[in-house]
Image (cartoon, rainbow, N blue to C red; front, side, top):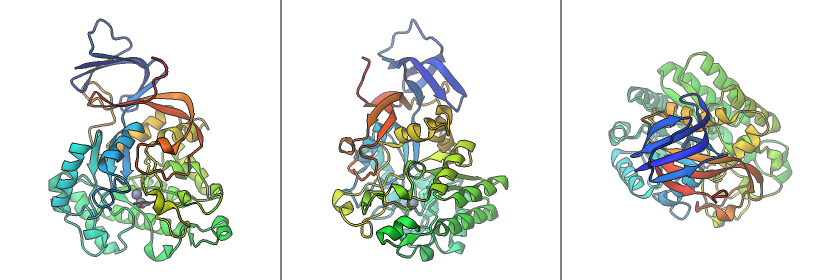
Length: 430
Ligand code: DOR
Ligand code: ZN
Ligand code: ZN
């Protein structure tokens, strides 16, 4: 099987390529990259004129909800949503029911994803049994099952001594720890950023320190143990400064920002609408500015979605009572182009780095590259196409987004996994 992608602009931060190039795929792998590939008989020729050709995006932070919450999302629907968003590899968080916390559960989840997902799914294992924070999960067993990353996402392991043991094990097994930073005692019953908006709406607040104290703790424990630490969904200006400090120490430390956190501030919450409720919450203008700057200077390494589907019924109530989380897979690229590239914070090349090369490096996976010999996981985008986000068109089962009706630029045009087309957008020029 030969697929030839012609006339596109190849952006590949792993090889430094950023120019018009043709790309030939043979048997699922990148076979040749050259300014002009001619005289080759291909089974499929894709004309990518005016488009960007990049390694398939990697989302380090997705909630697939299966097993246990199939009314919110399944592996199958979440994977299709990923493909529509240009993602060819995603990390599935373990806060399912039951929690993925042992070898057997991990094996089941990995098998199921292999059968049902049209993209690659990396199963993340929990840090403690049942995510209860009391006893370490079966980390050795999960390692044997092929798990390469651990997370307690949804909460932090509050017992610092137990967490340190987990970091030591992760280091021993060369696993990356994906840290959700939230002090359980400080957060109380907070639902929105502690500030004017929460006061106005009469909602309990979540202060920046709820995040920052655990960010600081985790960085110090990574320093002590030498573990590879990646901070999830950073939302505050002090978390940026703390990550910057940790990196100056030479630690194996990286961090991600979600599109909603670099796009919206608490002032964008117009009323008691649960589609604006996520954890961590939308912060102040000063925090958002710090995050954007950190995207630009590289303190923040990755864009990840924290795709958190919930049913319409669950979200159809007050912010006070609704579950935390919004969907993100199908809007991430457009929001990044619109908010970060078009506003001059980062280039398309840097965007490519944050969606491909950096997550691959942090996870230690052989993806995020279109070098000859690589697996042909590819996204083709139309960087100038403008459209209005329509959540009724999402293929995710979750439609919980604050971005419905937002005008954006930059659209996914085609997604390929190992050379096979898994998503095809409206084809405007053929
Ligand atoms: O908003 C969130 N939703 N934040 C989390 O940490 C968990 C997630 C979920 O599982 O719904
Ligand atoms: Zn989280
Ligand atoms: Zn999450």
